[in-house]
Image (cartoon, rainbow, N blue to C red; front, side):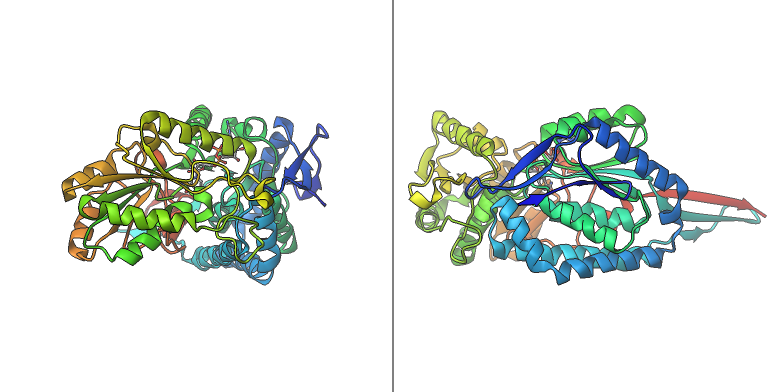
Length: 481
Ligand code: NAD
């Protein structure tokens, strides 16, 4: 049994109020850890530590290459312990071990990439229009960063924020999801090993309302980077107005997957399944809205349903498992309520829609992969983020209709187009109001390319060079003579 702690001002600590929370394995509901269940008092201590460390300036004054070297070392240590981190992540989230191993490789690469940018984050000299003067533009750290992350990719989402925040010279407080804090706790052990100065990186544990909200409200926090649900994002945005914090919001998605009749059938089927059922659909960019050209609709759906029924649910540690459980009883109940909404709205249940019968799955939060056909854009099941293994299918006849239906949502995170006419696909890509568009693929992302949403999927970008700029302020220094 793991006994977790918070990390505040260079020390591992319990919650000031002494409370603890049990962390459970979503595959069998066994208690795998107890961790502190903090309160606002702990958040305020962490904010004070980060503020003092920033104002002291040891980390921001270190050379960029020294900061880069420490961040690179963190990546190296993660790479060296890939298996330990991956096992912990699968235990905590229920996702397959194979998926967690890939996540850990990606995470090490995130630290390597931003470490490599550390000494390339310079400014520029610009020609001043005034005589005998010089203008230089420099990039400086923002200050104290509050980083708040969700449970679906616990360490990956944290890494996307931590690596650039550290490289840019900020100090920070990380608040992971209360459901999945284990790998982030382990990461903070590495921060200690590489010798980050005291107070630079702090970890608080507990619920959003108790330990997350104080980060958004505090006038000592200069930036909030949040990944999570849209309603939480709105609450945080309001709270962050207290001192006009800089912000980045990475919110949900209801991502369209457009399949044309001229697409490679096999590829489109494989990717339609991957798009929505990967990690049991608990992915912000899940392709949960399938738009199929009418000419191939019946054949496509028939094959899709056949293959969906074969998806093997099980323990993430079993090599044969293709999909694990949902994260919690409450989350499964939410997804089930959406299945009922779909039925009530008149969509046709083509497969799934219930908990699996297998005896060995009864203690986990499992739900069968579900497909609804005969859907219309006006249905709630088509408009709202379900965040589970539920696919809706609509048809279209023309390219214009496909574009209109794809854009008919408040979200704008990601989506895909399947067609062998690449020129057509690229023209459609330019018309989709989405932060990422895949052509003939679904889900690939990498650290060199930016990630983020249009519309109510949020603002700000993570990853890529722009992902580092989010954590910097830009200053113009003008010198006369
Ligand atoms: P959530 O919004 O419930 O919680 C996210 C985090 O915010 C958690 O750490 C939570 O404790 C904290 N929180 C909750 N209320 C808070 C408050 N009032 N003040 C401060 N912090 C608060 O989301 P979730 O259920 O953990 O994650 C699922 C959501 O995350 C989905 O909507 C998904 O689309 C989204 N997501 C988006 C991306 C992206 O890149 N756009 C990536 C992953 C997940």
